[in-house]
Length: 408
Image (tube, rainbow, N blue to C red; front, side):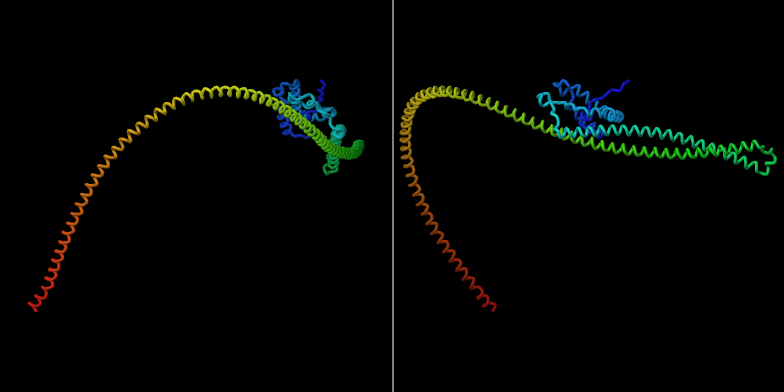
């Protein structure tokens, strides 16, 4: 069954470089799977196909064996093809945003140069790998021949050792017990020894030649491995440089797309602002017209209400004036009556105060008379007490003199 040809650049689909690790592949796949899932891009008819292609790229590159086969057999052809347009996840973008412009001439020249270099290096690596496989096969064949030669040498050496043992046995002291060797046997033995010696020399020469051949093949294999490693390093550098150019192109395109989207957003915002301003102006005019009509209607209502209020107020005012007049007349009448009563009450109180004053003056005179009498009695009492104290003092002063005269 013929192998399936893959023409898609799986590294570009996953937005990674050829030297990306498994963790980078998984991270990029998860990010792109969330963005390109068909449920999130219902308006894109290619969403399912793009998502299936993303899954195929991930399943191929995450498996080491499939990735190695893809890098050797399919990636050089896929790289030579123009990059597919990047799937979009926004269903509202225009056709101009979905079409990706080609890179600049300088970037395109660098991409072409790196792609040519990578293709050449892939061919060189493939040729060197074929030579290495050929030399490894040749080394295995030569090593097998060498082992056979060494086995033959060991057999010859064993036969030589056997003849030497037999010769030593014939020359020993108990050889007389056995029959002596005939001339034909001796010549045959010498002929076999000569043949073995000749075969040994030939085998030793062949062994040296085969060892030298194996060493030469190993040196050639080492040189091929060095050249393959150098070519792979050059390819890795070229892949990295190409990825850098692609990244630069992608960043420039993303920046251009972002600037264009920003410009479109500003235009939309400007148009939306203009539309909102127009709607606001119309609303304000309508509201102004309604306010004017409402103000006019309210003014008419206010005028009617003011007129009605004025009429009611005038009626109430006239009524209040009549009531106030009657109330004032009634108050004056009551005030005059109260004043008359107050005058009569004042005269009565004056008479009572006059009588109370006369009684008070009389009581005060009587009190003063009693106080004068009390003072006269107090003075008389004090004078009597003073006279009594004087007499007592005199009597006290006279008693000691009499006692001295008696007891003298």
